[in-house]
Amino acid sequence: MALRSVRATQTQDLPPHVRTFLRRHEQDEHQHLRSFETILGTTSWERAKLPKMPGQWWAVAVHLYGYEALGLEFAKLLVHLRPDLWEIASHEERHVRFYEQELKKILEAGGVAAAGARVSATAWWRNLPRTVDRYLGDDALESYRQDLRRVILGAIESRFRALGLLS
Image 1 (cartoon, rainbow, N blue to C red):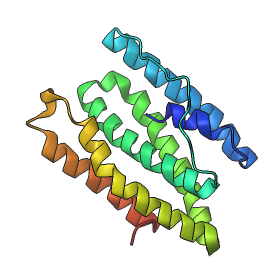
Image 2: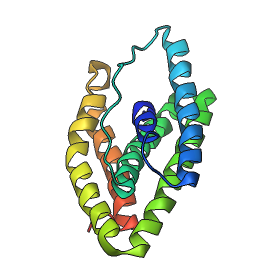
Image 3: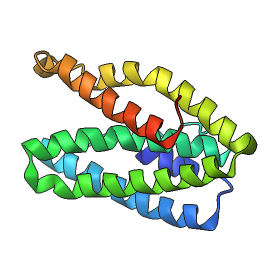
């Protein structure tokens, strides 16, 4: 879900271990995309322009953590339908853990970065319900939409609160 954001982030000045992780993360996301294209029998189109990402690592970490947590929730649903795609959920779990660990470091260090991460998380959280609604917009999900929405938003909110990003 975060392929283009991960690509865009790699152009920034980041700690070396983050840059290394992002290269692997991009490979995983690219593999997921190709799997979905094969299953659906279609090729996705890619925009030439990458999304604009925040300039501070703490804001980027919140952004990617949130979208990876969202991706993980969808991957868990996917595995119920297609157990053969368990590897996607495994990758998403690894991505979420990485950003979670990075955000723990940021929050434990305190200061401007920690405060900024919390502000970024609050802003990201405000936009999430609209994003989830868009992702669940297909007519085939009509009878499940409200339950899926509640479960997805609840799981992500729990993660954000447990980490200390939301009060």
